[in-house]
Length: 237
Image (cartoon, rainbow, N blue to C red; front, side, top):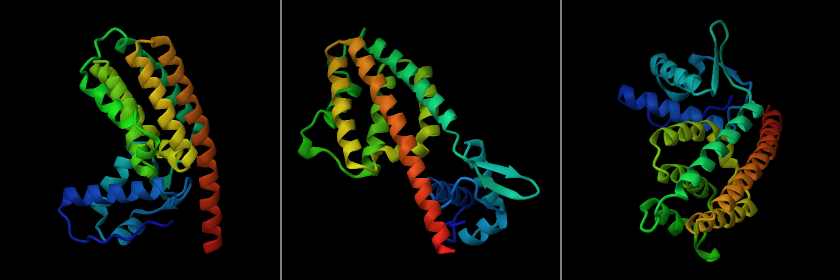
């Protein structure tokens, strides 16, 4: 287990829980904690310089979000990646986002603030494109959430956001390779142009293809990243 050591030993209780939660989540996202790794509350408390109470609160929050499992006699374990589960979530994304695009086809998008925001971010020259993986990941997430928001159905947007948060752990890896960043800009641009020009069926097909490709890529990249992280762990022992 490679939990990063805390640098902020003095926090208010709420801030401390949030800090520990974010630190552990980062450890999972960056593969410092690997699927199957086991640890105790005491180990975490020592490493993050906190008492067991805020540690336990942070751990249970991560359990509710599906990142950890608790074993009352043997501590905690990082949940294994269930790719079938993630791929089902991607499929639900396709349904929700396709429905959102259909709704957008019936709206007047001239002067629509959300659509204008997306055009400013994605319909740009190649020399203006961002290349930082974290920035592009956040921008990509905003693109898809914004499409659903622009459709004007709050419940649909809420459901979509919940799915987005669940797949974030693997989805962000899609932007660790430059070709995937370039492809994302190109594909988002094509989707936006089709939406603005009211070519709804084409926009839906482009969107479905875009998400399907991303789904395949993140599985491949995740497996590679896990393999490399395990190799490094073994070499360090």
